[in-house]
Length: 111
Image (cartoon, rainbow, N blue to C red):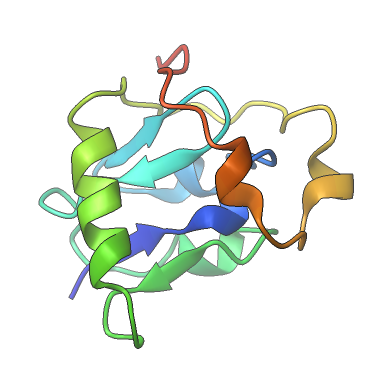
């Protein structure tokens, strides 16, 4: 099992999860985070830390596409290990539907 980040993170990018991750497997894009499924040790400590409920185990239904999505972008984006402020409109965007249209492939700053 591994954990993934889904589209609930887009336009929010809460980073509470990166501070608790013992293996630094989060990677930062311009407007979301992903988890490297190969680095994740399945500890689950990140899942309850996400205010947007964007972190899910890959054992839930229909997660295969998100495992591949996380794998792809974790190879392209820089690692993030330090908690930062969420995006300016994070609270407003939290829970919105159809956020994939807002997705940016650009990398974040990383640490």
